[in-house]
Image (cartoon, rainbow, N blue to C red; front, side, top):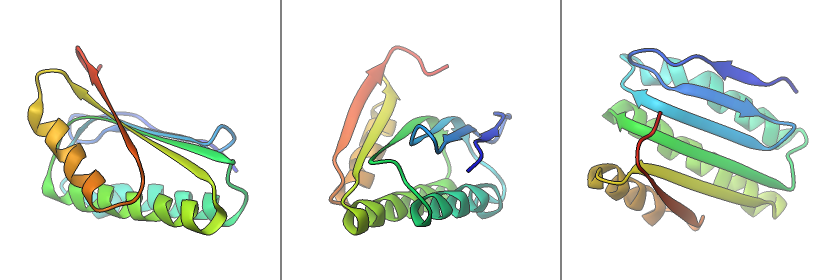
Length: 130
């Protein structure tokens, strides 16, 4: 399975999915006009990864600076997809939610997402997300 790398823009985050390592990283600002159009290819690739041969441990790294409502819905879908992997295959899923130390809104958003899943979130404050 091939890696996916999407370069960051003014309105979309950098996305780097490394199936061979079991790592998905989403980093930056995510305010696309059409969140479904941007995220659906990522979700489809993630579902393919789960169906084919997932790694025994998968890391999902959220390093988001700011997101819109459309992105929130896509993040929720993504979390449900990886939650199904952990339930189905008994694989270990690590969700790492990075946030800038002074950005309580993004920390709270991570808390919100963690509240509707059994997956354990690790919250990691950073001075700045670059």
